[in-house]
Amino acid sequence: MIEFHNVAKRYPNGHEALSHVNFRLSPGEMTFLTGHSGAGKSTILKLLMVMERPSSGQIVVGGQDLDKLGAARIPYYRRNIGVVFQDHHLLDDYSVFDNVALPLRVCGYPDREIGKRVRAALDKVGLLDREKYLPVALSGGEQQRVGIARAVVNKPPILIADEPTGNLDDELSAEIMKLFEDFSQVGVTVLIATHDMDLVHRFGHREMVLRRGRLIRGSDSGDSHGAQ
Amino acid sequence: MARNDSDSTRVSRGASLSTVSWKEKRDAWLAHHRESARDSIQHQLRAPLQNLLTALVIGITLALPALLILGIENLQQLGEHWDGAPRLSVYMERKASDDQIRDTQNAMRQDQAVTSVSLITPAQGLAAFESTAGMTGTMALLEENPLPPVLLAELQHNATPDHMESLQKSWQQLPHVEHVKADLEWIKKLFHIMEFGKHLTIGLATLLGLGALLSVGNTIRLGIENRRDEIVVAKLVGATDAFVRRPFLYSGFCYGFSGGMVAILLVIGGYYSLVGPIADLSALFHSNFALHCIDIYTGINLVFVGTVLGMLGAWLAVEQHLRDMRAK
Image 1 (cartoon, chains in turn yellow, orange):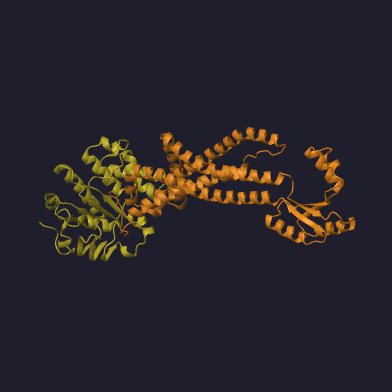
Image 2 (cartoon, chains in turn red, yellow):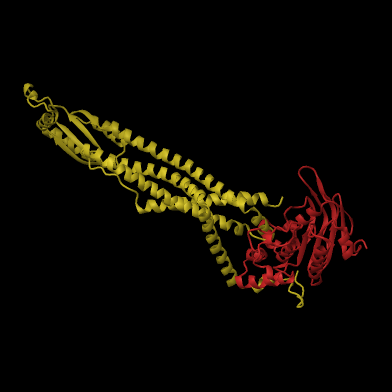
């Protein structure tokens, strides 16, 4: 589903964020991406979102070579990827419902379809009764779940998360991880960047470890299933 | 990417877009247009002072060149009606015979631009001179009439100063013609002032238009700043540039449209403040000159140009922002 072939990213200031990164994620696979801050986790996620382009190497997602993806087609490509952010990026002046509905509005879904899908997504994360609330009225864990509902509302085949449990306590983090596992079990490819090693060890999925822009572990599916 | 959906959960994948018909997508697209239009109007109403100022800037920008153009059109009208058509006076030799005068008259009529050639005999000339100059009696002191016969040629309204000058030169060569005099100087001046005014207007309109563009762009940029997070998130979940642009284009449209309306009000206001004094002035000169106001077409043009400026300014501001967000 996701393939990185010898990917490198060098910034104009000379900083080499990634070099020789190779990996392949199968459909339905749930993978942790770990490493210290600055190791290149966010860069990999940005490359996947085509917020940045690699300096060299090839990235193929769902059979689409991202290098051949023109600027005009990037929006349509992104609709296949749900993203969850550490600071959840919810819009403060939109209700929970409208926050979750945004990806559907962007895709041009009709209202009746939006209502149906938003409620299904909110139900999945257990927040169906909160749809009229503003994000500030929710707890940190609830906000993150709204972020997840937004990421999955248009049923993307890929879900990526950048430190989704960064601000949450252990119990809430486990809850969130459980949600991601549910999605991966129905075939969604899930990639989670995190530095919460306890969590990674507890859930025991495949782990890819980055150090100074290089993958030092977990670079291929058959390789290992993380650090048990 | 498509795999079998699992019925046990609500999350599935694959071609979910295909369940939405073309008609529904079009309806959603129209709905977003409606929503963007409504939102931008609400935004305008929420910050009335800011929006009024922007509309005023556009209005003044449009009103100034419009007033200049109106002024030039009125001046042109003034030029046309000052004393009818442009004229050339041909002074014959005093001893020229009636036949010779008639020959000259016929020769002058050959030119296309000449509408009529009338003769003022020395006697008529003297009578006119005595009556206007208030010199009754003085002329009687002269032993004989000193005035020559004069042929007065009236030209078409659109005769250019250049053409008049060439006529003047060629008529000077005709036999028994003493001197050809044209009221060239003031016509020439008026013509050139008019040309200058037109160029000035175009230059001024361009500069002011640029100013309006920048000020709309700046206002829209503030709007973009306020909705920065929204744009970032929308782009990340797959919003097209057009989707992001749409609400701002509507805002630009609102600014431009209200700016055009303000411009019309300013021009009409300017007209009513000038029409009285000009009528008085014109009466003093026994002229039937009257100030013309803008017509409906100029009004529509003003609103149209304002709207285009507003939308273009919005487009440029959003485009700049989107360019900054693009993948490198």
